[in-house]
Length: 84
Image (tube, rainbow, N blue to C red; front, side, top):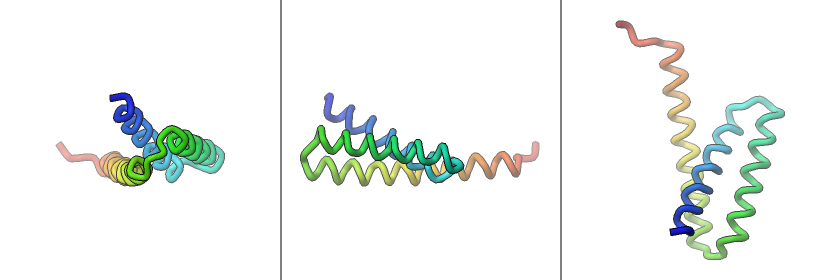
């Protein structure tokens, strides 16, 4: 249970930090990038299994894409409100 929870929380947080890195301006994006790198290194220290590491990277990338798509939807709805 602890490994699964740690895996899910780490991958969601890393994917979200990668998404923030791609949309924020320069100084703040570097902080998000460093935090994602630190989180990845910490995850790799705790889990030495190759399957867990590949799963972490794959799920972080999937969550990154989901984050970016949701953000694109939100920006589109803000710019083009639905007529009532």
